[in-house]
Image 1 (tube, rainbow, N blue to C red):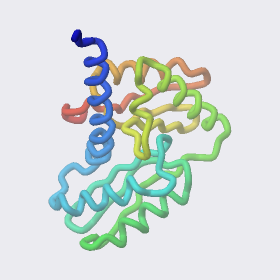
Image 2: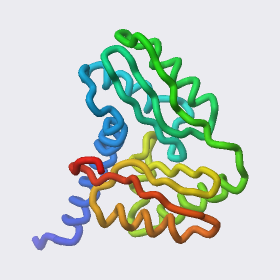
Image 3: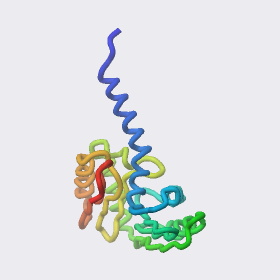
Image 4: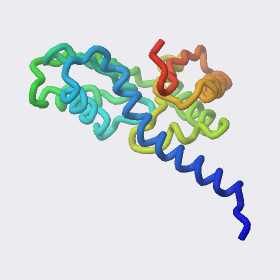
Amino acid sequence: MKTNKYSISQFAIRIFAVLLLAVAPAVALAQGNRGATNPQLARKVRHELVTLPYYGVFDNLAYSIDGGNVTLYGEVVRPTTRSDAERRVKRIAGVTSVVNNIRVLPLSRFDDDIRVATYRSIARMGGLYRYLQGVNPSLHIVVNRGHVTLEGVVSGSGDRNLAYMAANRVPGVFSVTNNLRVEGQEPR
């Protein structure tokens, strides 16, 4: 019986993609937790943030922990996501205070159109759709007054560059900031 090497390699690639999708979101949000002294508290904060009901691909959240003090950062599309994040983190055992520095992005039909167009452009570019899938995607698209920022983690520098090119070709975008990190590399 002859084995088809092409289908075995396809299977291996699919398994790798599934594993990447499972691990990359954890790495993405954990990068916002530099210098945490309590890894158990960091896991709890991360869990509360990634399970927010309206947290999605167009939001970006990060945090830092200093003892029992948690500082939240990032940008969200809905004001309820900002308040829900603070409320959930405050109720975690071991958290003594929460500083909420999350910005709510302005309502804008123009920005909404750019969000959708950027999402589609990235999803259609060289297999990057895998970074946009799932409940907590590993790639986040933040649009503020026509300026796009890419946040999150990708598996290689080629994917990082492809995402940047895909976002740059969207009509109406004023600028693109590429803050994507490559898995396993130190943040810039």
